[in-house]
Length: 265
Image: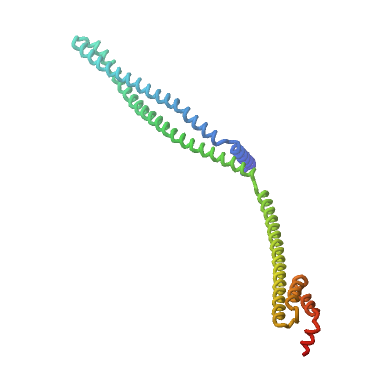
């Protein structure tokens, strides 16, 4: 391939690509429909001319037929009158009229065939034009829909929420972590309170048990005289100072001399 051919091919390819970019399919199809419709009057004129030629030939053929009949009558009349010279002249005219009639008949036959073909071609063109026009309208509708889809896609690209969604997810994770930490702290705090309440309840139970123990000792006379009152005081002291204070107060309770002597005896 020569250099010039390569350059020509590159130029045609570049030109075609540029035309494809600026070419609007919708406008091209609309113009194609207009061009097809504009050709219909031209076809009608062509068909009309063919039909006019056919009619003219038909009229000439009819006139020649009449002329042949008229000349034949004149020849017969001249022969009856003994005018052979006139009859001979009419015979020459008759022969020429017959030749013209034959030639006109052939032309008329061709003109009639051409007229039929022209009408058929015109009708086929109109039918094809309607079909192509319908297809073109569908293509135009599809082109408009494609254009709207492209515009919608471009609009959707302007509403790209990829970065915003990432930021939103990140902030949501942070908030979830904070909520989880707060719930954990609250749960730990509730556990400490529950533990402290359990300790208090156990201590109160121990105090009650010690009080009951002192009551039994008092009833059994193991605490000496005044035990009931002393037991009450020891229970009250135990409630205010704890189990150790109760034992110390019981041990420190004074014993009357009489009770001590009775105890020794």
